[in-house]
Length: 280
Image 1 (cartoon, helix red, strand yellow):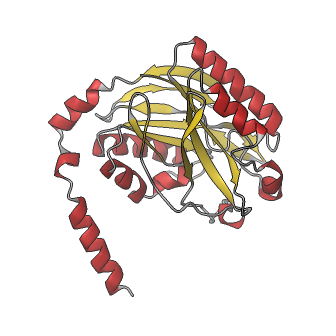
Image 2: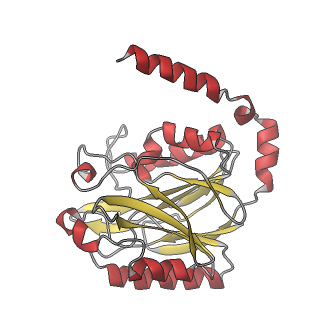
Image 3: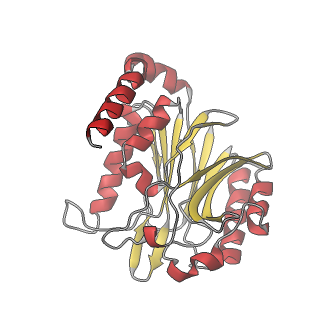
């Protein structure tokens, strides 16, 4: 399976300009023989929306979303936008489209509202985590902060995913390293750990550019189920690159390291129930 990483620089609040760019990247990826293109978190709108949120929000039936879904007759597309429901709830959502139809929508569950982040002020939290079947594989989506909570990839691994997609708007910020590259280093370690621990492919697609002084570092990457790097966009510039995921590696690694086979999800379920009951 050939996956294109669409490492884009969205224009804040400009849905029409961003839509044109995404469709251009879809065409490029199709010409390069990709089966799927993955875009970063909120690639259709930009990230630091604040009061622009309700202006750029779109329902799944709105023209811009329909245009991207329609483009999936060329190749599969995973894109992210501010989704508005009929009840006027707003979500950070990622939509997987294939053959001109919606296959799956994941609404971001964990909304960072600490430090420089204020997502909980503007968005509703997603209420579910689910795997879904694609043409070539079974997949799951964790949008940025979702992946910083191990429960999300764990639940998806129990659901039998082959590939974990992580669309991100990850800014450069200091963590343990004391430098602005700390978050980048954290992500690099995290995706390799998840790939090896859950013996699945991890596709991490991060945006680039600046918004209100906030720097997004890019460096999108694909990691194999052995924890080894399949490929990386080794830059903080806008780019599109296509990498091959050899799905036969899943069989090899899951035989060599049968962690999923031996995982006792029923034990986890029982113990969590007991712990939550004790905390009441």
